[in-house]
Each structure stands twice: as structure tokens, then as C-alpha cells.
Amino acid sequence: MNGTACEELAAKEIVYREVVNPESGELEDHLVSGFYRQLHEAYYDLGFQKMKLPALLRKVRTLEEQLERAKALKEAKLSAMLAKLPPPPQPLERSTTDLGEISKVPRPSRAPVGTVGVCEAAPPRDEEPPPPPPVPEGLVRWRTEPERS
Image (cartoon, rainbow, N blue to C red; front, side, top):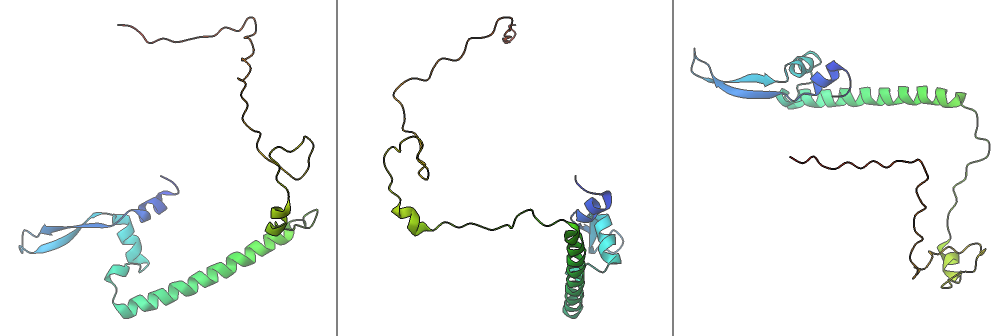
């Protein structure tokens, strides 16, 4: 669980279950899970599933306007903070690679040592790798073995 308790409770899914009303014998929806979220949505008028279309369109328009104001406020605060930062020590430029120039570079099977501009993987060697260095004196290796019953 991440965040504050209210955010966690508001994120919980609202689940209804149909139950028979013992007095009237009719089926009713009873809230089983998401009690806090249901109260939160009712208070802030966020129960979109139960809204009629005109009310839903009004709510969407209002929320979009609020989002635009929030984004503008965020940009204003970020620009004020970015203005406080010192400029970079050197201009930042993005380099690109000209693919036409790369195709003109000769690609020998094995470039001599010290060649600049050509990078290739070393070919596999037929020799075996050297053995690992010996264990220094005084170093104790511990090995655990499974217990025997």
C-alpha cells in the first residue's frame, strides 16, 4: 500500500451485492466494499455511473477546466523554480549520426590496434581462458552441506 490512508481508501473499488429485503421481498443493491470511496464520490459529486447525460457533460466540462487551470499553475510554479537554476556550463546540443557517412567507412575484418573510428567486437579465441588466481593464505572457505537425517 502506497500513499496516504485516504488515497488508499478512495482508490478501493465500490462493490454492490444484490440482497433480498426481508420486509418487502424486493431485490436491493447493498454496498459491500468501497464505503469511503462511495462517500467521497457522493460528497464531491463524482458518482459518474449514476449521473444523467446532461449532468455528466457539465461535470466533464468542469473537470476539464479545472485540469487546465491546474496545468497552468503547475507550469507557472515549475518555470519559477527553473529560473532559479544556474544556466548549464556549456550549451547542450544533440548530436546526430549521418548514416550516409557511416556506410562509407571501410569495415576491415580486424582493425589494427589504435585505429580511431572503427569499433568491432574481438573475434573468438581458440585458447582457453587463464585459470583463476590462487586463494590467498589465511582465507578460509566455508561450505555448507545439507543436514542428513
